[in-house]
Every structure is written in structure tokens, then in C-alpha cells.
Image (cartoon, rainbow, N blue to C red; front, side, top):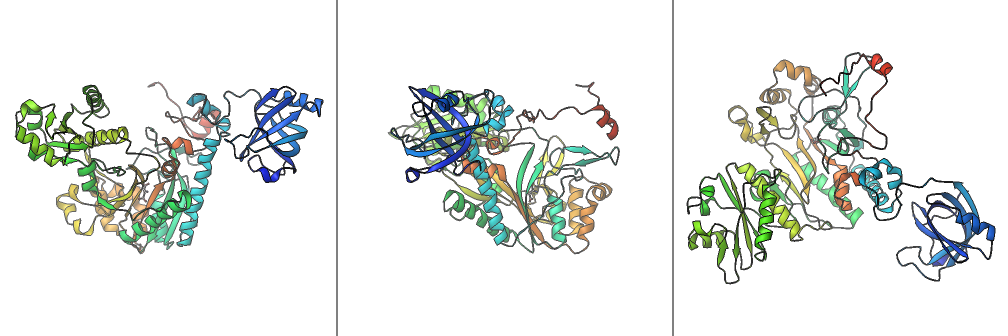
Length: 586
Ligand code: ASP
């Protein structure tokens, strides 16, 4: 037996016991005739003591132990003279009588202590060492518990976990696919699923009325902090349900997760229409941890003074930052630089400070009468000491997005976005379509299988861009953690939606015939949603990047630097697959 106890569990109550522990040597210290070592395993750290006066040979062997050696020790648990308050096991130590080196280690590229050390790339290259760190390990523990509680809740609700294939076909719409060549079908390719969307709908046709799966999905997109080329969804689908049934069921799941994992009771989730989310927050995933809603100022500032920027604007909107009139000129210049950054793209920023006497001093004073500035103060509901920030532009959507970035920035600066505060909501009534400048056509905002709101169906022929969908997202702290829709289950309506998306009947049949044919065999009304497990867990763990809750993540270029993947394959493999690689364009 390698061990009788773990390194994290010994306490004063164990004093006097003889125990055997196995683990990694985190560090050793020699003090006089004594050698101390920190022994670490998944559960914690225990101090080992080797006493030269008791066993000189043993102590000498202990002195040879290097960082990250794997050892087994036997000894007696004893009370520590100088307690270590930072460790749960800090009251005790092991007076070692036997040492067995199980494996030596070469010097690790960074030390495995709590604090991060070593650059990102180095940590990723040696991820198995990085994972020995307690903070990274804790994220994986949380992830495990999260997935476990998801399964527990959904099982109790009668959901069945069903696996769907990873080698599927390439479908248009959505992101780029990862493809896999087929040796047995030369010149043909599988695609890895971007989500099991159509498969779960087929499971509904098959009568599996409550399905879920914790499943890997693959999208060949540009990467960001909250995106990985492969990520995990909690994918769910239900039959014989309306939107309300789905919202209730999954609000219940979120409530269960918050309670079981964080011990937090969350209130009933408010519901906000997509139109309101855009109007008041400039985003379909508003961070509602704080208020600072947008106020539209077209009536107040357009045409009421000589400021041509506002007079020509299609949108003028402001936010009121409570108590921030103390912002200095320099800080305001910094904010202006912030909104001018290319990623945000605003032309400039107008500000107005409300003085303690209620007077308004703004950067556009000379263009407006005191009455107009007073109207501004009133419209913004600004109090003495508040700072009003205003963005305008020739394009409402763009200007709102810029104001959204500014609102988030101010929220962060004002400490209104703490990671341990959670604000959840449903965003509902998304539009069916959005215009794509790139493709010069309407694209499905969610996906092509989403049903329109029944009352908007007549608009499909006359004004498709204004049709609303039975689609919903769950948003927490400005992060879209999940989203879904009630699906179309009528083959004819599905055909029409494909047409609006620009597919000819033949193309639609070729790409989605399998689904439309299935719908002809009695498809039940159905709907569902999928959560991004990595994002949800990162929120619970207070992480900035989803990478930190993934055991072996990829970097921003989509590389696994530990495995050195992707990489070339042998010519013989290419030949077998009948593939030729041509890099001449590179
Ligand atoms: N399959 C969808 C997605 O990946 C979610 C859903 O509609 O259920 O976004």
C-alpha cells in the first residue's frame, strides 16, 4: 500500500498515529541537524521532518531529495512547535522513520507554488506541472462538481443523457467547421459538430422527449479569452414544450447549481426583451450587476444647439456615473482615448459634470444654452457630483455598442462589477435575422431551425428583418452562458426559412434533407438550449479566461503547445487519404 493517509487530511487529532504518505516534494529546508520538506499531493501539503540525531543515514538521503521527486514516507504524526496558519495541516508534522524514493524528477521549469510563476506559454507547455498547482486544480474540481450537479438535476427532471457522433457532416451557416478526411471515402470529409443541434432534434422525432448531453463542440473561429476551438456544451432538448416550460426548467437548473456549488440563492430571473437590452445597455448580454442604463438624448441635444456632431447624429445617448464629477481633465482624456480605440471606434466623448450647486459644466458648453444643459441634467436624472458621459454617431447600433463599452469600463472603474456578485437574467424575443454586410444577405441570428413567433409569421413575406424569434439567452454578469429556441417542426415552414436565408429548394434539400424528411414522419413540437460549460464554470470560479478551467487548453493561435498540435502528418498518411498539401499561397 502506497499510503494510509493523504497530505491534506492530518490534524491535531491524528497526533501519535503512524502514517504512510506518498506525494511530491515541493521544497526542502535544512536547519541545523534537521531537514524539513513539504510533501504535496492532490489534497494538500504536510510537513515532513528528518532528524539527523535520530537517523543520520535517513537524513542524508532526505537531503538529496530534489523538487518534485515522488516519495513515500512512514512516520509518526506530531504536533508542530511553530504552527503554520496558512495550511490546514499546519498544526502537525510527520517525524519520518522510513523514506522510499518512488521516482526522481529533473528540475522543473518553474516552481509549483500557489502563485503563478513562469510565462503563459511555458505553463502551457508543461501543463501537467501547472496542474499540480492548487489553484488550477481547484478549478478542475469545481468543474467536476458542476458537471456532476448538472447531471443530478437533469436526471431528477427525467432527462436522459444520449451520446451523439463526433464525425458528422459539414453544414452551412454558423462558424467554420473542422473537417476530417475519410480514408474509406476518398475525397470526402466528415465535419466535427459545431453543436449536436440537428441530432438532438432528430432525437425528439425519435421520441426521446428529454435529452441532454455534456458534449464537446468544435468551431474553427478566431479565439478570444472566452473562446476555444473545442469547448463543452450542456446541450438540452425537450418535446411538447413551449418557451415558458424551457425557461422554467433551466432557471431551475441554474438555481440548483448556484445553491449546490456556491451556496447562493438566486432570485427569479428577470426577463428583458432583446430590443430593451439593446436600448438600455447596447448589448444582447447586458451586465446587470449595476444600473447606469442608457438615456437617449436625441430630443434634448439634437437641433437644440450649434454642436454639429450632435445635429448630424442618428443616435445620441448618455450614462450617468454617480459621484464621478471628481474626474479630472486627464482622466476624461483617458476615457476619450479609450472610446477612440480602433476596437471601439467612437469619434469622441462628450462629458458634463454636475457641480455641488447643481450647475452643469460640459465639454460642449459653448454650443448650448444653460436651459438645454439643465434639460440634460434632468433627462439623465443626474445629481450634484455626478458625471454624464455622452456618445453619438451616425449609426445607432454602432453608437450603442460604443456606449456599452464605456458603461462597462466605468462600471469596472467604479468597482461595480465584483466577481463574487451575480446578476442573472433571460434575454428574450431575439430577432430571427440579422443583416450580414459580409455576405450581403440576412443570416439566422440564432440558427436556421429557430421558429418565428407565431404572430410574426405573416411578416416573413413582407418584412423578414422585423420578425422576432422564439429564442432566448441566459445572461450572467454580461456573459451569455446559454441560449436556445423553440424549433420549427413543420417541414414547410422550415423550407421557407431556408429560402429566406438564400438556399434554393435543391440546396436546402441537399444540405438539410435529412432533417426535413424526418419532420415528415410526425415531429413533435420541441425546443431546447445549450449552455457553455466552460463559461459557466469560469464565472463560478471568478476566472478571466475559460482556459483556466480546462485541463489542456489551446492557445490563441489554436495550438496545443504541450502536444505541439496541430502538426504535419506523414506522406504515407496523406497518400492513403488521397490528399495533397499545397502551401504555395502561404
Ligand atoms: N445548438 C445551439 C448552439 O450551439 C443551442 C440551441 O439552440 O440549443 O448555440
